[in-house]
Image (cartoon, rainbow, N blue to C red; front, side, top):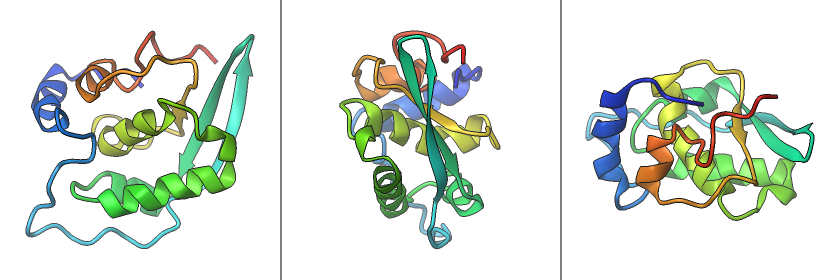
Amino acid sequence: MRFSFAAVTAALVLPLSLSPLAVAPDASAQPAPPPPYIDHVTWAKWGDLSSLRVYPTPAGRQAAGEVGTVAAAEQAWAEVLAASPDAAIPGMREQFDCHWQFAEFVQPGKASWNLEPWRPEVDAAQMVAAGCNPGGTEEPF
């Protein structure tokens, strides 16, 4: 997912210097909807490259579109790992957290959040600046 809103990136990089999920909940924020947050996941291949396609449920999209849903993000990642234990690869959780925090704000309704094990591990600011796709553009498949 390549974000096209520089203002969104700039506004969100500062809080991410601590953690991708460090945004404090607003006192008036509604509680996250109940799980499940992930409908299903599937691996896609293109040549030697692979991508884990994460398909959120409506509740997952709603929770991801709200600030302060750290517990829901933990639950959602656990659901990803339950569906695909081989997703426990360095850098994949960070990509997931980036998508959880920003996908529904910047590109709502995207069919899947795509996580790639071949992407480099980067800090949170670089992750956001790269639109959750460090090391290259979104995969061509």
